Amino acid sequence: MLKKCEVCGLILDSELIQDRCPKCQADASRFRTLSREETEKITRSHLTNSLLTELAAAAEHQVRLAEKGIADQLDPGCIQTFELALRQAVLLRQMIRAEIAIHIGKEKW
Ligand SMILES: [Zn+2]
Image (tube, rainbow, N blue to C red; front, side, top):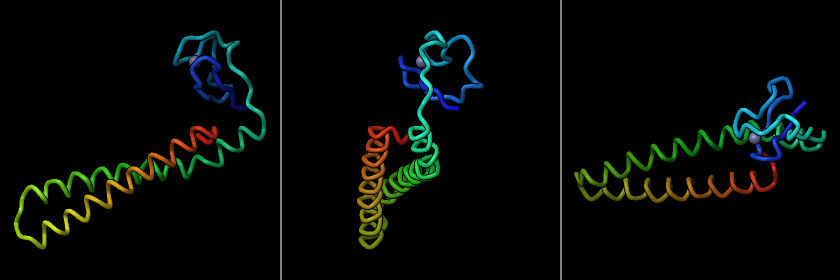
């Protein structure tokens, strides 16, 4: 059974809650039991949220590689390729951030 701290938003399995919220130290009575629908929404979105987070890290890595390649300036073809990689990675990263923000806003996190 999942419970949510109404003070800080931490969601935990009820077995992990002792006398205080481990994040904000609020009394355990401040945890509210999530409904079945809320629980399903959260557990259903775990895989996608994990994939999005991993993809965002990959996009960050691509940004760093592209910036190094642009800075190296070996030849126009390479610079063009790295600039394309940079634009695509930045776009992807921003789309992932927006999607995660939507998930958080819809309690799918
Ligand atoms: Zn808390």
